[in-house]
Length: 173
Image 1 (cartoon, rainbow, N blue to C red):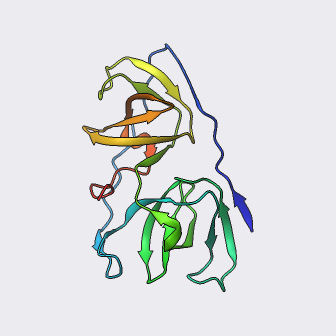
Image 2: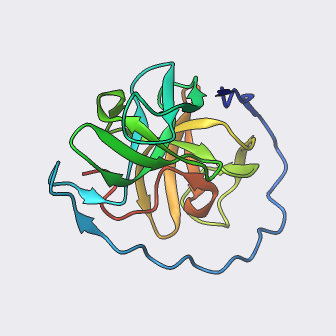
C-alpha cells in the first residue's frame, strides 16, 4: 500500500501579471450516463469525506489497498458505481475503488498547474495572487472559461482548465 497524501503548499501572493498561458486543445466531453444506483450523472466529481480514505484495487474490502488518500475534500472523478463502491480517478490519473460512504458532493478543486488568481473572470483582469500546483480551492461559479474560487479568505478567478474538480456541466448537482 502506498500513501497518497497529496499535501501541497499554499499560494504565494504575486504582483506580477500572468505570462503567456499554455494553448491547449479543448478536451472531448465524456459520455454522461445516469447511475441506476444513485440516479446521478456519471462521470461527476465528488470529494473525499474523511482525512484518510482507502483506494482499493477492486470493489470490496477483500481487494488490496492501492492508495491511502490523506486529504479531506480531495476531488475525485466518479467513473462507475455499484451499490456500495465507486470507481474513481484521482487528480494524478490513478483509478481505484472507494467505498461510497467515504464520498460526498463538494465544491473543492485542485489547481493542476501554477496559475494566476485574477480580480475578474477574464484574461485581462489584474493578477492578485499566484496559486501553486496542487493547492486546494473552493469554487462557487464557473462561466466563460473561468471559475470563481476562494483560498485563505481571498476570492478571485482562475481559468477552469487549470482546475481538477470542475468542468462537467452537472458537477454541482
